[in-house]
Image 1 (cartoon, rainbow, N blue to C red):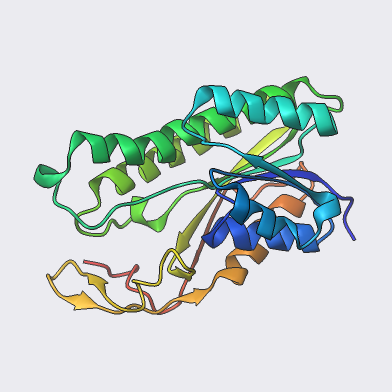
Image 2 (image 1 turned 30 degrees about the vertical axis):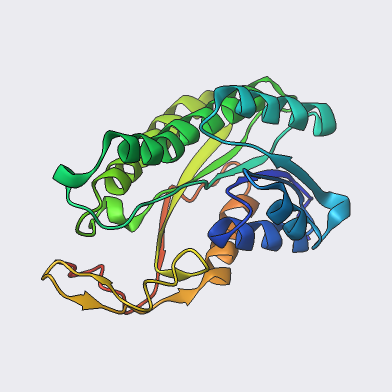
Length: 248
């Protein structure tokens, strides 16, 4: 068994984040569970309460993110892995009909939140002894082949790729590795509409194939368990028959 790591997972209360948090706890790691809702986090923590730290946090709030990293430092004194996962979307909407409020709501979580968590993690990993660690960003295949009516989500997820590349470069001298996982059609309580029907580029509504979300958790766990001299820079994991290759 690999040496247990100190792992932070944002958006850990549901969907992909919950599946990953469960997998990391069951693999023997110490996991900081971060999301806005305490009750849902407490439920996830029951998989291994002795190794779970529940910390409610809005990743779009700089003060709350700073408090999160202060709490991690106080309890563990270091941080080995971050799964920068928290994110939200909105119903398919053409850009002319997207309000400023909806734009900012998506951008504040998906982009501002990802920046704040990455900044806090980088600072902690750079300062700790031995220094170094790994940041895994949750991107999206939408950044490569967007869905119709997805300007806020697609724009923010495209920016995550730039964040990943820049972190990888800045982190080299500090032994901080950064990779990205782009996920397509993982079945969860957040994506059940995909199997019922979503808008297609040709104007139709069609159900799409999905995959078990635990497969995503296994992939993230693999990325996290690598030694720091190796890195999965970009990984795409998706339902094999989803309309991604050839989307449009």
